[in-house]
Amino acid sequence: MRWAPTEMHGDDVKLEPAWDGHCHLGPVPGRTPEEKATTLIEYGSRLRVERFVLFMGWPFAYDPSPAELRRQNDQVLQAISHWQDRLFAYCYVNPKQVEASRKEILRCVRDGPMVGLKLWVAVRCTDPRVRELVALAAELQAVVFQHTWLKSTGNLPGESTPEDLVRLAREFPRVTFICGHAGGNWKRALYEIKDQPNIVVETAGFDPTAGFVERAVALLGANRVIFGSDTGGRSLASQLGKVYGAAVDDGARRAILRDNLRRLLEPAVQRKGFHPW
Image (cartoon, rainbow, N blue to C red; front, side, top):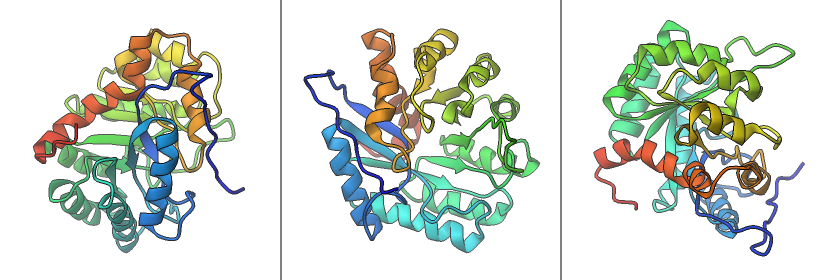
């Protein structure tokens, strides 16, 4: 199915400035990273999405080799180089390839423009090899984004759960971890992470359902919830609808849509001497 944006109209809802913390270029129309990024920016501008955080190139690989890690990070670097005022990025790493991943973190985060790490499904985040990469992220004041899921049919062998992420976050209390997808089964995930203050939850990547944002704010506080869409695999408008349709006050909505992610990225951004806002 070809991905395309869904529009919201100002007559229906007052659009707030938003930062999207979960984006992939692969499904977005375009032949090159530059073309895909340009398309993404165009669609975001219709919905007041000011910034996007990109990670992983294409095609998706469950267990990328060192060469594939570098190639996909290069795709993202190529994209953001043309839109430094609109795009941030996280470095894609594979804990099965510790030395290659360390080199990518040094190249892309320490010496490059990226501001976080992306961990996917090569291994669960309780694997000891993950710790070395997170320790390096801590030195660089980078956030760590961990894909999490709770599948009724069973997770992939290397797919982390929110409970796995809690175990990792306890070991690194100074690192901010983003619980990607809120575990999918957010009713369980929110209770599992609520007592671990260095984990924030993001809204991306499952169908809009009533009550999610309200429950997240009630259990975690509005300052621990960030907006993400999982675009281009999901439409921006439907994912924004989770936040606009939630029964939360305007201050909480603004924090979720933009202010929280901006605050989380600020240490890494300032360390690089950027002045993007």
